[in-house]
Amino acid sequence: MRSLFRNAAAMTAALVLGACAVGPDYRAPAAAATAWSAPLPARVGTASLVGWWDRFHDPALTGLLQAAEAGSPSLAEAWASIAKARATVAQDRADRLPTVTAGGTAQRAKQSALGGVATANTLSGTLDASWELDLFGKLRRTQEAAEARLEARTDDWHDARVSLAAEVADDYVQYRACRLLARAYADEAASQADTARATATSMRAGFTSPVNGSLAEASAASLRASAVEQQAECDVLVKALVSLTGLEEADLRQRMREPADAPPPLPAPEGFAVDSVPAAVLAQRPDLASLERELAAASAEIGVAEADRYPSLSFSGEIARSGTALGSLMTTWLLGSSLTAPLFDAGKRAAAVDSAQAAYEYQLAAYRSGVRTAIREVEQALVRLDAATRRTSDARNAAEGYRTYFEAIDRNWRAGGASLLDREEALRNALNAEISLITVQRDQIEYWIALYKALGGGWQAGTPARALAQTAAQATTPDTRKSGDAS
Image 1 (cartoon, rainbow, N blue to C red):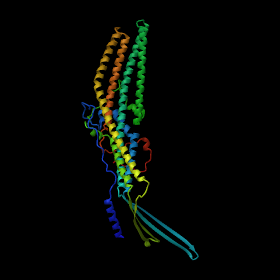
Image 2: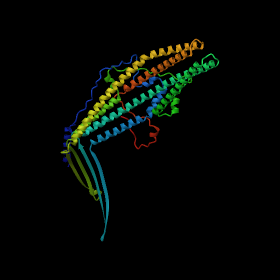
Image 3: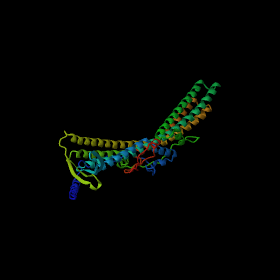
Image 4: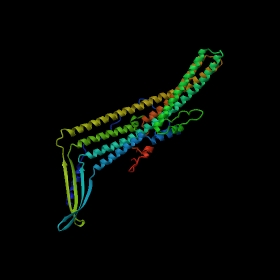
């Protein structure tokens, strides 16, 4: 029997060493872009994308980002996808190894006859083993596909994290700008209300025409309406931040509370440099990395379908012991092999290969589309950031000039040297210029955030994902096993 096992082992080793994996060997597609068309940011600091949020120097924003990440359903969903992909890899690895099962029975029988009672014991135990040899790489290609998809799911987690941070920061910056606009409208509305009251008093005294009184009241009403509308927009942004962070609204508003005298200015983050070579930038996008890994999985699945058209060889064995007592057990064994080969399937396996090839072509097109989308997003963010940067200085000068002009017209009107119509026109110009300045400052920060997201948020290939803090709902769900750390 020993010689039989030695022969079987030698034959198995020879088959394994001579086995090959059919199907294409995957090669990642080459990057197509060679240079950016849009202007790169000038006069940037030394900040990197990793930890860029800390350079906003805004504790409220930092706290919101941490809260959003800790309880994000999108990140929890991405983490669950990683766990599922990891389990699939473990299953596919196990399929390449032998399986062994054991069983045993014990019986006691009693039989009555005229001569007395007879009893008998029966004991038996079996040990079964089976192993499918991966002659043509079907199991190896299956494992390759599973491992590539595990990497893709990890990349998806990083992409969700970058997108979440960008969305929270964008809404936060919009909220801060909204509060500045609301304060501007409120101040102007209060000032115009004083003007309307003074005009009404002058009209009753006969020094001002009723037309001017109507104009002053109309202007005050218009500014009050604008202030209400702006405040409502700020409240809408608060609701969006509540949804993103998972915080209670009262807690969120407390974190973003403002000084009593005026809303805080917009944050002024330090800029970062953009690599002039698009290929280096695109390599930092987790969504593109995920698409590339899906492409690798699709390539491996061509080999899986191709290998299914070839014969398969498996070994099986059994060792059994049985008898009526432990001291008298008899041993029997069985060792065999099975070879199966597809003879006729009406083209089913060939169609499976064609389907896998089509899936690969589809994934390749998706990857190329993703590359184009990434280049477009970076280019658009660069163009908008450059325009906003160049507009900021002019917008600031315009706001200061129109404010100075309005103050001069207002003093002249109070002295009786200018008409109320001139004052209202100067007020509208000053208010519009201030709104434009706040808007362009907000846009400049938002375009930096968009560029941060378009560049992948500082992600690097091979960065592991990690489990985040559980939400209250998840914490109350019992778990029957320990979850391992991300690899």
